[in-house]
Image (cartoon, rainbow over all chains, first blue to last red; front, side, top):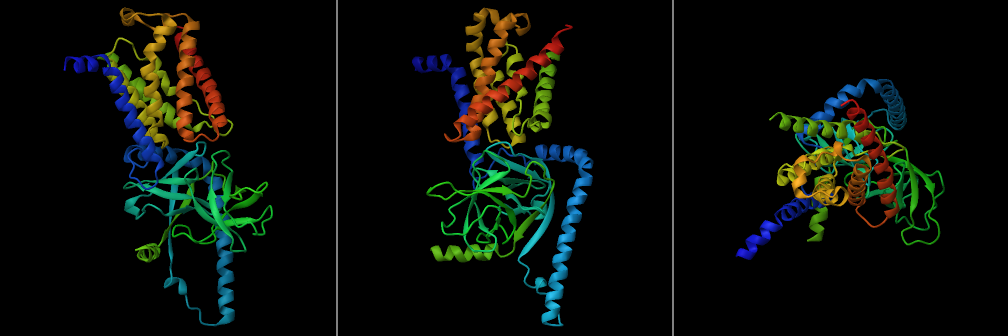
Length: 275
Length: 167
């Protein structure tokens, strides 16, 4: 007994140090696991509130460029709408607005209040949370392309796992055909991501557009990602292709969060097959 | 009492300086200084060591909260906070009785420089190793450690020089 007390007396600082380090390591491991509940994140009220105040202050500096992006997007969407109306009126004079009955996705706008892009595992914080019906595993996109997946929500803020994370796995395909692969990031350049495991016989050229494949319940089909920058060199097993992103990930402000209304139905169906 | 308030203010100042300004510098794309570890250098030696370790852990954890890095900053800050005493023994050749009057400002610059460079590099190396979290891209870890350490040290010694010159 004397020995044990002596041991604790002698190594009390080291034991205390070890205890705190173990706590820190458990936080680190929890943080990198997508499905575990997390304690250390920027979506809580203190950090979220502070980042929101800061972004409210700096917002005015970007009004001009934000307006330009918005008007570009509006023009593009108006053109798509016109085309759709003229097409349907050519086929039939009665326009049945099927979008009202067949709606599959709900879009919510949000603002990025904290953005990371320089680390191997990057996260963003946005100013919408549970009160705005944001849940985990929803797609986050903007007018130019994909940004990430919501991961952890608090009442008013949400943490988003950026596509610039070594954990990210997103289904993607080459526009115009059905060959698909998995989008990952190697952690080096924030303008370039990698497309893995695409079929070897797929006809891919430098400059081809890559978009989301629609084989997941998170991202809608056909959201743009980027263009092919470099084809795989030699015969490697995973056939890796470099993709240059459309988005400048260091310069993001307004985003859309996409909720898939059919997600639960699809997931429950897939789960019953496994039983 | 007054000293405690000073310490708390210094803690908050370094925390907010780090998360609101220094984390957003991204010099040449990804190089940031981590100046908040100056807290470890300046915290007086004579204080309770449990409290010191705990405060350093909390400082790192708060930085983690803001930068979404799990517990990486907490881990590395606590590590250098624990190692601090051994390096003081090595570089300054102090005995436990000298801790009461130990002050970085009264020590020769060469020794202080060695001491701070060592602790900074250890901290940054642990930080970037955990941030990378794999054995791939080890060259990136070393390069990041080097660049960020240089950035932190330049910033630290410049600020230190400006604020101590007239005193």
